[in-house]
Amino acid sequence: MEAIALHAAATVGGAQFYIACGQVNVKGGGSGTPGPLVAIPGVYTGTEPGILIDIYWRKAAHSISKPDSPGPAVWSG
Image 1 (cartoon, rainbow, N blue to C red):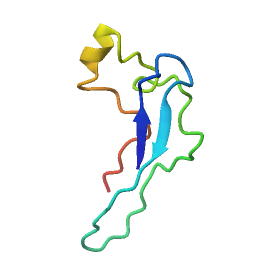
Image 2: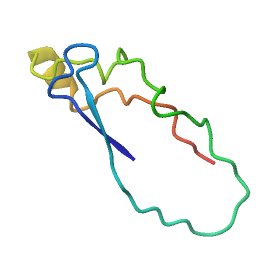
Image 3: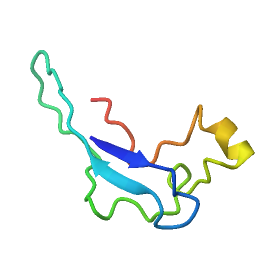
Image 4: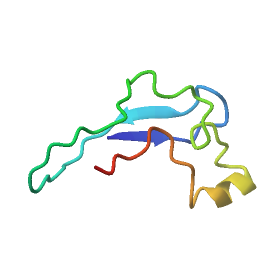
């Protein structure tokens, strides 16, 4: 998991990325292969919506309640 701090994200390179831990409970069997896989660092350019954003600008602050989620699609297998 990853957490992204947006308090300085109004400029390219301002977002701060932190590794976070999480617990996953897998039930049942399966033979799926999750994807797409990405490399960290390398998955972001720094200009994606949701990473390059001024959270203090009024219009942006209103969109924070439903921000664009950066990163690859969620695997549904």
